Length: 222
Image (cartoon, rainbow, N blue to C red):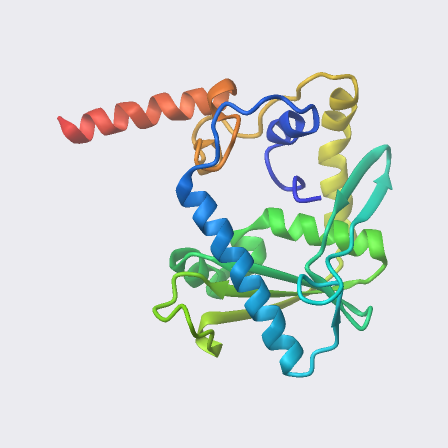
């Protein structure tokens, strides 16, 4: 479900188990580690405050859910549920993204997360999501205070969800036949950076992005 809202060619590479060309960088691995640690810390903090959370990394383990809609098979693991009334999603963000999230919300900063949580809601019939976003670049990593946390609620938007599914119908049909859809980006977006796409070097858009970045670095040196 996390592939929704992202590049559909990247999703195809993953679904078809195409070998990666660009291993995850040490920086990204460190961010994943920080994210996992923060998720456990924040989940435990919420439980200590009396929040009735289930199926989290702290208590019971995350639930694996599946959704089959219009021939598109999706699966994923929400970060938890609260009293079977709310889907809980815990995210971490750099200081830059955290600041933008405060102003623009999830739709403006990470639309892929919006699509992902709509899939969770559609699969479970729980029509509300609460995002909890922690600043992983906060000055004191031993503390998680209110200023380091964003809480954002959203409800299921049927028209938005229909649009996401329509975007995936044709690419999914190609993937089921073992074929690749067109990339969503044209080499001009950070999604094409090999730091964020494990198939950048074998994707036409990723290759274009890398050539442009190389030229930019040459100009800067000159």
